[in-house]
Image (cartoon, rainbow, N blue to C red):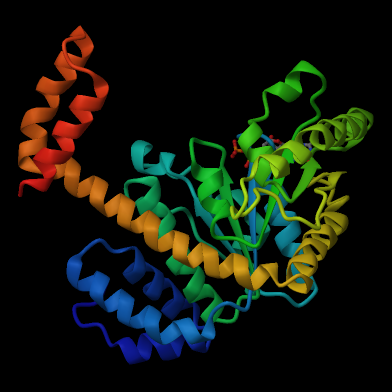
Length: 341
Ligand SMILES: Nc1nc2c(ncn2[C@@H]2O[C@H](COP(=O)(O)OP(=O)(O)OP(=O)(O)O)[C@@H](O)[C@H]2O)c(=O)[nH]1
C-alpha cells in the first residue's frame, strides 16, 4: 500500500473499472490499520451510491463437491453472455490455517485470466465477523466498478453459510448424490437457507444416481419446508421466501451441463423477490442486521480483551467446572466486571 493514499484517484479508478485500482481499494478495505479503516470508510461512502446493482448469489457446498470447477464454468458462461462477474469468498478457516481454502485463483483457471471476471480469495481478517465485513465491503467496491454478478463462495464451516446468506439475494447449495441416511448428513440449517439446490457431478456413470438423489432431496425438502415457515413467530421474517419453493436440479460443473438451468432458477428466484417487494426489504434488513452483527463482534472482542474480565474468567470457569458456581451467576459476574470500567 502506498504511503499517501489519494482517495479521489482510488474512487475514480474503481468507477472506471480499473483492475489495479479495484485491487488497491480492496487491500485498503481489508486493512486492519486504524488510519486505513478510516480512509476505507470514506472511500466506501463515495462508492456506496454506485453500488447495489449486482445479482448477489451465495454458493456453498462441502469440500470436494466441486465448487471451484462449478464457479469457473458458471462464471465463464455468464461472461460469455456479457455479464461482468466477481467471485468473492468467505472462508473463516483461512485465518486459522493461514492459507485460504476458497477463492484461490489457481482453482478457477478460466475465470482467473478472464478480463470480464475478478476472483478474490477470502480475506484472512481473523474472526468470521471480520472476514464477512471485508467481503461485504469488497462487494460494494465490485458493484461500483460495474460487476453485475457477485458470486460469494463459502465452505460449510460453522456459521459461514448463515453469514453469507445475510449478504446475498439468493443462495445456491451444491450437493452430491446422496440417498436415505446420507441425506441426514446435510445440515438442516443450510437446507433452510438454500433457495436453489443442485446435485453436482451429474455426469457419466453418476448421472442416474444424481437424478434420483435430486428427487429424494426434493421430497425431503417438501416435508421440511412447511415446518420452517410455520415455526416463524408472528412478526418474524420467515426463514424461507413465501412465494418460492426451492427447486432441486442436477448439473455437472465439469461438463457444463445444467448450469443454464441453475442460473435461470436463480434469476427466477430474484424476480420473485423483486415482484413481491421482498428484495428491497431483504437488502434493507440485511444492512440493519449487519450493523448489529458488527456491534456484537466489537463488544465481544472488547469484553474478551478487558483486563478485569481476563483476570476473573479463568477463576469463574474453574468454579463452574467444579460445580461450586452456577453458569448464570458466572455469566453475570463477567458482564459486571466488564461494566465496571
Ligand atoms: N465427475 C465430476 N467431477 C468433478 C466435477 N466438478 C469437480 N469434479 C472433481 O471433484 C474434485 C473437487 O473439485 P473442485 O472443483 O476442486 O471442488 P471444491 O468443492 O472446490 O473442492 P474443495 O476445494 O475441496 O472445496 C476434483 O477432483 C474435480 O476434478 C463434475 O462436475 N463432475
